[in-house]
Every structure is written in structure tokens, then in C-alpha cells.
Length: 216
Image (cartoon, rainbow, N blue to C red; front, side, top):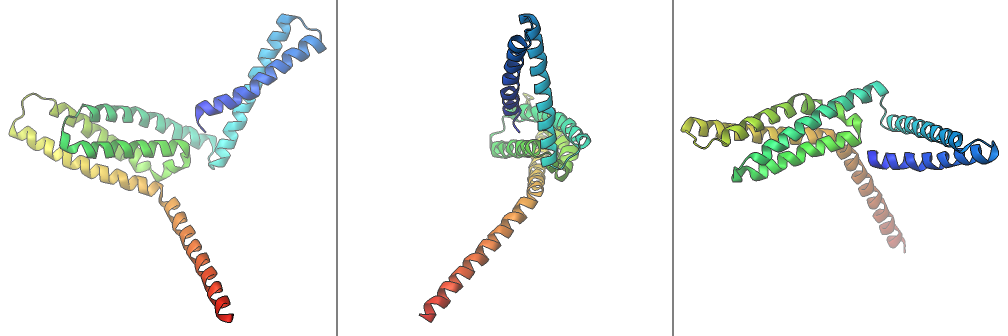
């Protein structure tokens, strides 16, 4: 769930609890204003904490993850987010116009994999090669390319190096695209299954209509 939305839901639960505890303490148990306020803050905080635990439990249950697994995935996502920031900074600093589309595709693919993993953490296991290998490679190459391409004077050796780096980055972009397809492989299989079911259902309906028409 979106963190901001989750916070709003927890506050929506905690605030009425805070008000209720204050009213009960002040009017029912004749507590002082300060004591009632203290109890209400404590009650609201406890309600917020319990609702957080419950929502986290539902989230882990929905995605079939243990807390240890989720913490492991979350740690790797935090590291990946830093690498993505470095990658975006490097890509934006490159001024090579012919490779602009390739860089845009690379940015789109990496962000898509990250966002997909963040919303559905279990998909992390389908993209481990991206997080532990391909992302590191593309970040390092992009940063080196950005550094070399920023040099004011380029000799033939430097131009060859830049050309080779662009070629490898193109290959890595294709590899990362395959990483994304691997993450979506189960969804694609499910979609094909649903299409086949729909086709068979439609065929059966048409066959039934044809038989009924012939009988008439």
C-alpha cells in the first residue's frame, strides 16, 4: 500500500480513538483535563501502533512473505533506490543526442522494475539478477560514460571507448528489459490462459447458436 495512504488510514483510526479516550476519561471517570489529555494521547498512540502492526501483518500475508523476508527485500530496495538516483544523474548529464531514446528506455525500465517490486515485494525473487548484477553494471558504465563524454577534447581512443560503452549500455538495456519480462512472466501466462478460456467460451457460444439455428 502507498505509505501516505497507509498513514492516512491509521490516523483515521487513531484520531477518533484519541477523542473517545479523552471524553471517557474527562466526563465518565472525572479525570482532570491534563490527565485526560495524557490518557487520550497514550490511547491514540497505542491505537496507531496496533493498527500499524495489523496492516503490516495483512500486507505480509497478502504477499506470502515472512517479516524476515520483507526486511531483506526492503533493505535491498533501499540500496537499489540510491543506485537508481546515481543512474538518473549520470543519464541526465550525458549530452549524446542519438542515444537519447536508449537512455529514456533504460530509465523507464529500471524505474518500472523498482516500482513493481516495491508494490509487490515477492517479485524481488524474480529480479535478483537485476538487483545484484545488472543494476550495478549499468550504473558504473553510465557514470564512467558521463565522465568521459564531458571531457572538452576527445582523441580517437576516447571516441572508441565511448562508442564501445554505448554499445554495451544498449546490450544492458535489452538485458534489463528481459529482467522485466521475467518479473511479468506469470502475469503473461495468466493472461494467455484467460484469453484461451475466453476464446473457447466464445466458440462454445457460437457453436450452440449455430446448432440452434439449424434445428429451427
